[in-house]
Amino acid sequence: MPEIPIVVLGAGAVGKSCLTIQYIQGHFVDRYDPTIEDVYRKPVDIDGQQAVLTIVDTAGQDAFGTMRESYMRTGQAFVLVYSITDSESFQQLKRIYAQLRRTRGDGATIACLVVGNKLDLAAQRAVATDEGQMFARQAGAQFMEISAKDRLHVEDMFTALVRLVRTGGQAAGSGGPANAASSSSIGSQPASSSTLGAQATAAEPKSVAAPVMPAPQPAPKPKPKKWRCVMA
Ligand SMILES: Nc1nc2c(ncn2[C@@H]2O[C@H](COP(=O)(O)OP(=O)(O)O)[C@@H](O)[C@H]2O)c(=O)[nH]1
Ligand SMILES: [Mg+2]
Image 1 (cartoon, protein in one colour):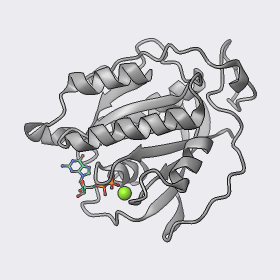
Image 2 (cartoon, rainbow, N blue to C red; image 1 turned 30 degrees about the vertical axis):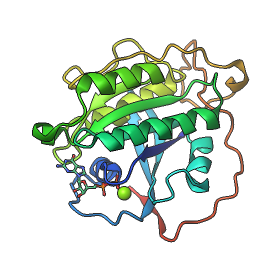
Image 3 (cartoon, rainbow, N blue to C red; image 1 turned 90 degrees about the vertical axis):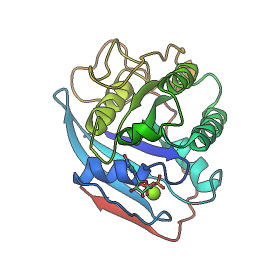
Image 4 (cartoon, helix red, strand yellow; image 1 turned 180 degrees about the vertical axis):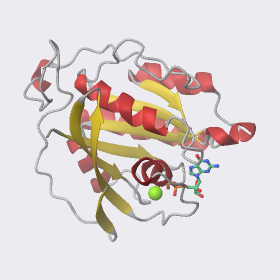
């Protein structure tokens, strides 16, 4: 079964752990140790094709450290999260994205979703939907606003990401959920030819299935203090 390594990136306290746990375990955790870096494995069947998602919920104060860069290198798809109630988290996400761009190479297509979390706190909104959308467009990414707390669009988000990977990182038509607060499907950067290679998709390979990343490199992985692998 093809494995899809997904990395959840973003500033601290934007809800990376909550949205990941909500997706994997189906409940909202009010408090979660901000230093824990978890890896979850979840078998999924999306559009009749099976895959195993390996989701890294990144953590730590070392925002631009070696761990993060190593995940940026080996991930196949990225969830770029900010909180709609925290404009600093939006600015920080832009910096994280810039690092991702540098790490993957300027011409490379990156399968990523820009996600504004905490939509249930819209009354405390500090980042306008338009701003998130504009950033996503510049990044060639799809955009969604979600609530990890209310499980709003959490499932849709991972489904959209898997579809993005299967179409080679290009946003496929109007693939986003119909009722998402907003979703733009852009992503028209050409796949760099050097990234073309074998992507382990299930049966019925579509005509264009340009993989999104070079083969994972055997980066030395210093283990964070707390690290667990959780089977869904
Ligand atoms: N209201 C609301 N709070 C959230 C949501 N997602 C996360 N939180 C809260 O935000 C804080 C940080 O969440 P966490 O997942 O630990 O953030 P992380 O550091 O990005 O992993 C916690 O207090 C959560 O309860 C959400 O969708 N809505
Ligand atoms: Mg966390």
